[in-house]
Image (cartoon, rainbow, N blue to C red):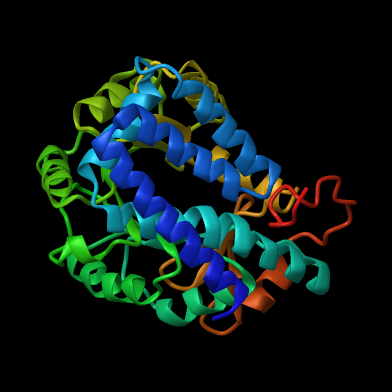
Length: 345
């Protein structure tokens, strides 16, 4: 067992103990779990998050205190351990260190996650693509799912990649007909306002799975009015992501970004709300300094923040070469190498 595996095992054991303590003594247990997160965090970004959580959890009336204790009480420990470790350690610590190492060696940016548009029949080998991503340090995947039968088949692929986290955006609120309890490295995102969402949220909560809501928007009214956030609170969804539709204007995107940032800062509701593409970019800037979002279309073509590129096809070009062609060369001097590198400060 190498050093990474040993550290992963130690953190997993600490999370398991922390969850048990929350269930027996919510206030004390929640604070101890966050203290453990602070202890194991090496980069400034993670430490900043946990310091903010420590401040919130002093007050049992805090909305985030309610979020943490409700999650620990209803989600299965195996799901919290697996998914939390895959994002917090594999992606943002170990994976970030690999990304920085590869960026320095290869001379181009590497995104912290891949956006996979799987809304239609997938023409590429998803299993192979994820494996390529992991070797570069990419351990998080934002998956926009499509037809149920295809999603059910792909769930087996996600499950095989036990060290990666999958954010699974479901199109109509129906759950894939698989044993959702075993898919502990996935967070199911149900569409806000869809007819099947409430029933699926109840099933996931009963099964102890991790889930949230997502709101596809062209105009920002439901986000700005708080309607989507209220639905998330009612369904006990701790996460709400607002995803801009292709027709959303820059003005609408800015309004949603500002609204969701204010909602997170105010902490009035037990739900974390974010504008999807903005939060991806924010994390990218910490890991790679420059934003470097990369998406894969169902036919294998790639898309970035600048749009679709039909000349580059993941079926014929390795991910490493795709990044070489599409990501800007790193020309800056990193001012904070410990931010996400896993190095001690």
